[in-house]
Amino acid sequence: MRKSETERFAVIVAGGSGKRMKSELPKQFMKLENQPVMLHTLRVFHEFNRKLKIIVVLHSDYFYMWNSICEEYSCSVPHKVIKGGETRFDSVKNGLEAIKSDNGFVAIHDAVRPLVSINTISRCFNSAMKYGNALPAISPGESIRITVAGGNKPLDRKNIYLIQTPQVFSVARIKEAYKQKYKPDFTDDATVFETLGEKINIVKGDVFNIKITTSLDLEFAETVMKNTNFTN
Image (cartoon, rainbow, N blue to C red; front, top):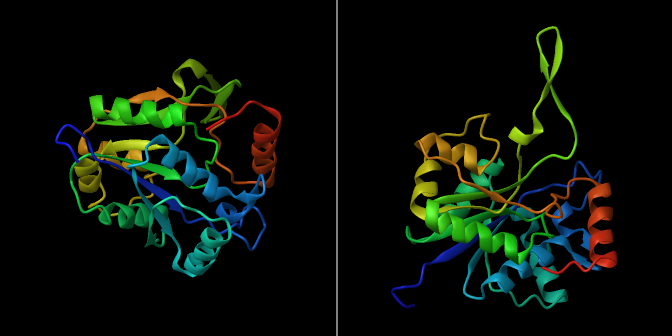
């Protein structure tokens, strides 16, 4: 590797159990356009950068299933599989610990966001390399209200962001952030990262980059892939 190159990593978090889908099959293994969701996700990151070092964090109960999927669908994307933890926080921490270098930048991404675009990944890495971190986000289209004592009140949606992944960080700094103990208010990697006093940098996200958590989400993703000019 040339000295001018920056190391890039991706930690793909795949700890879902399928409970919200009311299915015994975890949602990352459900079929989307005749292939498991997570295969689509891995391929997007591989297409983004063939030198990207990909780490998949998966519950150990599903190692055999994933190996079988890779064999059945001839998955040629190089990646390393790491055992997940009790919580998403623990799983991300395990994934980060598998990165032996403290240099470069790492994208942390939900395995069940298969519609993420190469452009979004590129924007996040480029912005993180400039500012130290990057979070893709979109603005809500609906009116928003918040509960307050005695009722509720409207919020200006221009000041609201819906956060997505991949969230990209300096490897050294995000590793440092994940040395602390888990707290319930750690809702994503950015909330862990900003405890170091870091300013969070938001970049343009993508309305198609949804997180598949329900059967309706899966139907939407199928529709996007079948009926639009969607390309990764």
